[in-house]
Length: 85
Image (tube, rainbow, N blue to C red):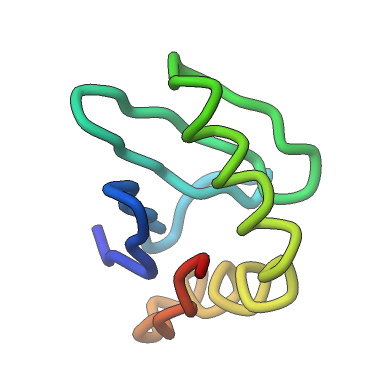
């Protein structure tokens, strides 16, 4: 699973040729979850503070995330996305 960003101990991944809706996989310490890009819907358990950082990052990089989603559907290498400062 390609890593597309990492910040504050949070790692963001996107799999190739995944099912819709467009989403990312996130890991932080012993937590893991899946978050839909458009709705922000969470599947899994994640600390609120880390989730707030990810939500902010998604809003900033939504266009890039959707572009990577399209690349992943075509099995084209994904682009790294700038971490949250």
